[in-house]
Length: 159
Figure 1 (tube, rainbow, N blue to C red):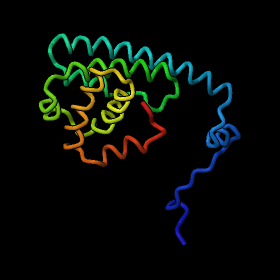
Figure 2 (figure 1 turned 45 degrees about the vertical axis):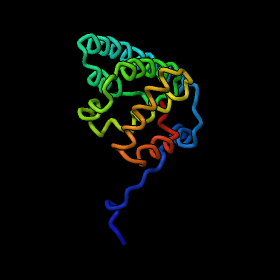
Figure 3 (figure 1 turned 180 degrees about the vertical axis):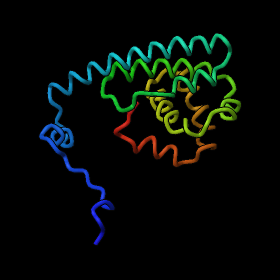
């Protein structure tokens, strides 16, 4: 009916790809993940220095944008996720004017920010939760309920 070039098919070509698609990681894949984790940690350390510099210059919104850029949601390594959470947390806590933040924060950051807000709420730390709730309220007004649904429904790319 359709020529072959109209049909997009993705077939695993090796046993290794079949195992990945079934979710069975081999020892080699775990080693690659560990090497990748070290590279991610190095990038996060660089990002931390940049954010500290922006915060010293009183640019908390730029610091938040930098913290949210290149977040490692696809990694399974908890060290990477925790290290990046600390960077994002530092930027979130520096925000004083939430309304002003949204006037200069691009909509492309809304979904990932919502994920980090839920991570912040899960800490149970009173100042963190208060700040996350303030931002959550304004973000929901700005981005709508779809932002909440996307953040909660995406169980693959967790932060």
